[in-house]
Image (cartoon, rainbow, N blue to C red; front, side, top):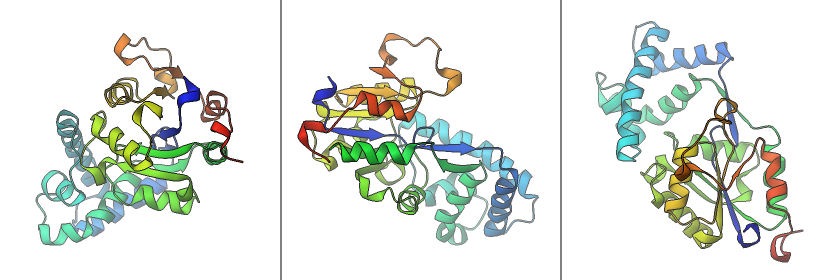
Length: 248
C-alpha cells in the first residue's frame, strides 16, 4: 500500500508541534498582553480564565458544526463580546496569537524538521492539514523554522472555514498538491477525528501518532488507522525512498 502513496499530509498540534504547558512565565506574559490589548482592568489570570470558559463553548459549537469562525468573529461574538467591536476587530489576529500563547509555548517536535527534510528528499509531496483558530501562526512558524519550502499544500481550518473531520479539508489539500486522494496519506494524533475525515475523503492511508495516554486505549473498528506510530522518525520506515525514483 505504501508504494502507492505520493503525498504525505501531517497535522500540526501534537504531531509536528508540541505544547509545553510548564512555561509559566510565558503563559503569564501572554495573559497580561491580552488584558492590555482589550483594555480591561480585570486581573489577567481571572480574565483569561473566563476566556477559557467561553472558548470551550466555542469549541463545542465548532465541533458540532465542523466550522471554524474567522478570528474577528471568534473575538467579537464568542470571547470578548462585551468590548466594542471596532476596538477588537483590528486586534483579532494578535489576540488569537496571545490566547494560544496563554495555553503554553509551542515548539517543533523532536526530529520533526529532520523527518520532513528526508521525506521531501525521497520525493514525496508534503502538506499540512490542521484544525487551528489562528490564520498566521502556522505560516509564521513554518517560515521561521525554515519548513515553508517543504510543504506544497497547507490547509488550515482557520483559513478554509471547515474543521476536521469534514472531508472537504482533505480533498482540498489533495487538490492543491495535485495528487489524487487515494495516493495520499495523513498523519494525525486523534483516532476518531483524523481516521474519520481521512477515510471519508478517500485517502489511501491514515497513520496516528497518539498521545501516550491514548496509545493503548481500545478503539472501535471505524477509528482504526492503518498504522500507529510512537515517534515521527518511524515515518522514515513507513515511507522508504526514493519514491518512484524521485528525490535525491
